[in-house]
Image 1 (spheres, rainbow, N blue to C red):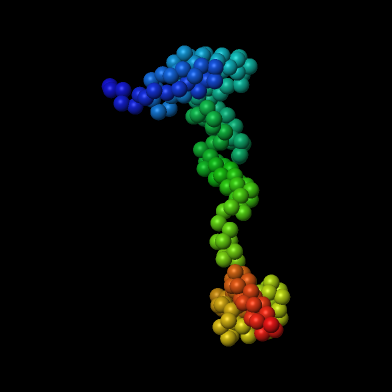
Image 2: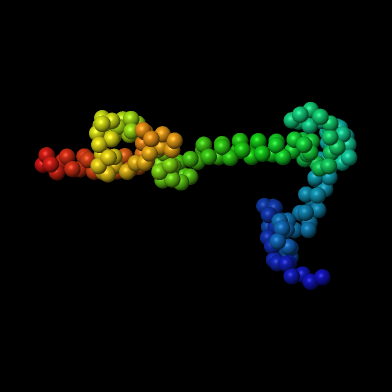
Length: 177
């Protein structure tokens, strides 16, 4: 076997910092790795003495449904039937939490364009009457389209209402000035 992936690496132990030949996933020099492995083994044996370990093949209770299952991995918490659903729930919750924390950075222009309003909502946003909005739609000054399955109401993008309102204000200023 050739040492094709072995490169000079720097040990991540702040007390060591030695340079060693290691593969792409090598973080610690052989001496520090041996110390870390001994510490890991010591902690595992202490957990085993306290009865906090679960051997592979033993029986445990599913954290989601309460049924018993056979342990096939050290971090397994759910039975095979519940595992996909539990992972999906956790992933969904984490995704929603991330979106809630970062929604201002996640494509804000798209969010504005996606919002559609009724004629009444557009009138409130623009500060004009509903009749004024409907006249602007019919004359083509305000972009809108009929809502699906409803021939009487309009679907208007909020960004179009704001653009139209700015044009109306500008036109009134030039007429008055």
